[in-house]
Length: 266
Image 1 (cartoon, rainbow, N blue to C red):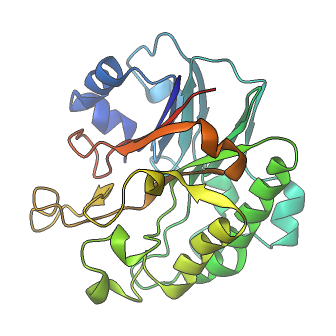
Image 2 (image 1 turned 120 degrees about the horizontal axis):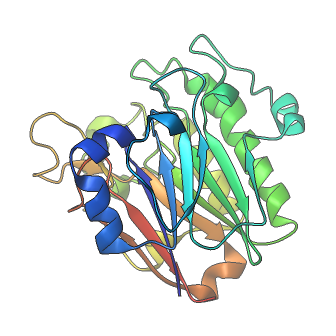
């Protein structure tokens, strides 16, 4: 069995300082762990990370965004960012907030049996001022990228995709229609992955609402489970027979997101 975890830590140093980091690793012992929103550079991590091959891809802007990979099986290679041809074709060149290609958003690791893509999708922003980047450039570019990878071997995508796909993926869908994370454009972007043959692995095992991965800090939302499912493992259809579990871990604190997992019998 191979157990993969993904966790938007919303600042790895904060998770470490809260004591949640060691507890998580000791209890769950992931074979592969993908992190998003690390908000740090490698030299700023003060705790030893033992037993893993570790790869960091921080944003150029200090204290912002960034992804990381901790893996026990050694990947054949690890590549940071989207390929230049994809960037140019889909005009992923940035907006008033900056260049997403400099924000540490995509890390790809090649293993013998699959590609693993760790992604932190740009947030559309409260006023939807980054929605155009998402809809016109990022989402189609990312889909084109993972389809290119899939031409050679199955793909596993994990991370914070910053969208609730269906009404079952957030506690209050009616009042959030058209708001960031639940616009028609963002939902179409996710649906395009499904239409291209990728599987939302969590929905193989869990149906209905009440399963969330992010909660607002306001109004005691997490304790009341008023949340959103915006973190995913989406996988190539060809891997479906090997998927034995896909779960969320809302009891693990330290971040406003909880970890998620995918278990494969390879």
